[in-house]
Image 1: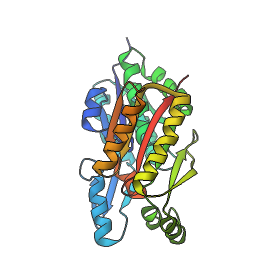
Image 2: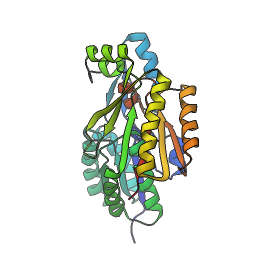
Image 3: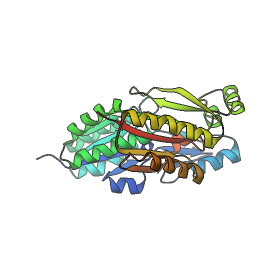
Length: 291
C-alpha cells in the first residue's frame, strides 16, 4: 500500500489560507523578507502593503531570501515522521535557490525516515505555480502516488501561460532589475511592461502598454483574454495583484464576468517577493492551455 501523499508549496505560489484549505494543500513554506534590520516570514508576518510603506518611508526596496535547507528540514520532517511521501511544488529555480535547497533537505529527510520526497521545479511563480499546486492536490485526491504526481506536474509546465503586468518600473530599478534611466523613460512615456515566463523559467518582456493605469490594465486584459479564447482550458483561472486597488480589482472581475467562460476563478494577493520587484498595481491572469 502506498504512503499517504502530502502536497506542499512555498509562498511564491500566492496561495492564501482559504486556497490551501479549499484545495487540500497541506503546507506552505515562507520566503524571508528583510525590512531594515528585521527579517519577516513572507505572508505570515509581512504583506505587500508593508513593503510599499517601507519603500515610501525609506526609498529602498526590501531584500528577499529563499528558504534555506534548514528551513526545509523543519518543514518536511513532521510529515515524514508520520510516514508520508511529499510532493513539493517549488518556485522557479532561475529566480531562487529555494528549489535547490529543498532537494538538500529532501535527501536527508528521505534517508532518515524512509519516505519519498519529490520537489518539482515549476520554472515559474505566482499564479502559475499555484495552478500546479492545486492540480497536484487534485491528482493526489484522485489516487495518484507521489512519483506519478511529480511527473504529471512536470508535464504540465509547458502548458501554463505566465504573463503578468508590472505596475511600473521604479521597484525594478531600485532592486537592480533595470537601470534608473530606463525606469525614468518608461515613467515619462507612461509605459508598463508585460512580463512573460517561458517553460525554462526565462523572463522576457514581449509587450509594453501605454497610458493610464486603468487603460493599461484593460489593454493587458484584452491581450490575455484573447489568448484565453484561443488556447485556454477554461476549468480554472488564477488572478492576483500586489496592492488593494479596489478599482483595478473590480475591473478584473468585471472583465472576467463579461468573458464568462472560466468555470472557476481563484483569486489572491501576490507574494512579497514578486511585489518587491513589481511594485503596486502589478496584476496577473494565468491559465492552463487546452491539451
